[in-house]
Image 1 (cartoon, rainbow, N blue to C red):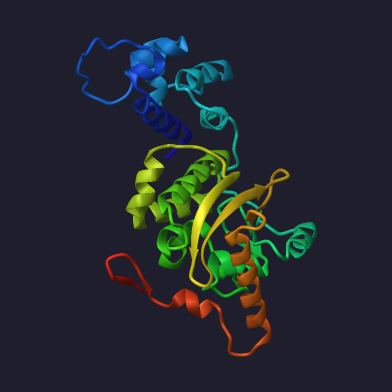
Image 2 (image 1 turned 180 degrees about the horizontal axis):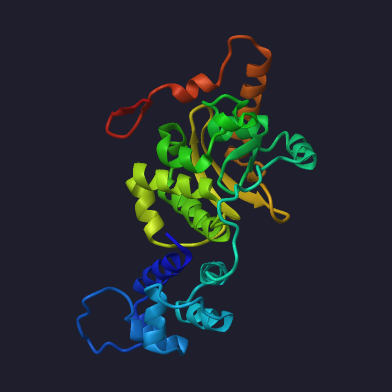
Length: 309
């Protein structure tokens, strides 16, 4: 799918999600054959001709000017993330390297030192494709304790957290409200895909997830865009039980991001993390003790069914 097609798909999807009453357009009780605004209504709100807007949606027009894109973003009621995403999609005429593989993502020495400093806080370093490039002991135990702790060090075995979220039942079971977490990840991937249209590995990942997960395909088709900056999630950890964490992305610019899980002081969740730290610490010092084994036990769900892999 080229840039113009992606732009048109985004415009159609977001237009269909706007109701006339959301933007003050009277309908006088008329029945509509399709959901959302009509093209001519969106064009009127953006101050462009219907024919021009139609060409944009159909991928038949050259890239729009920044001013036109801003006007369309306003008509679609996009937030700042959505507006920037629209501009990324609209730059179809800029020169982009074709066929060049992006440089491998690496964890800097400074980031390694940060992981060491965050010894008592679960932390994981994610690349733009959501590959786990590194994690500290608690980050591994909280997010993927059933995997080899050294997996991020081997590019061929490096875990991808988006793939795990949709295709690994152990990781999926971690989130009490899995759809909320899944939509946040998909919305962030939408932004990344528009910023890095030359990243074939990223687009291969998106194709794989769309083919293997109907839920991913459905969420991807919504064209929601939002960076994963901060969010509260209730987790159900197989070792320490339920805990509510705040997932925060620490970013200082281009390159991998550090994601940390924090808890409220004095809360049961803080106590659960302390217990997890104790359990993982014992596992590294006592032979034969493996907390990862608890991840792999069949879990009993409501209705008495069990899930195994």
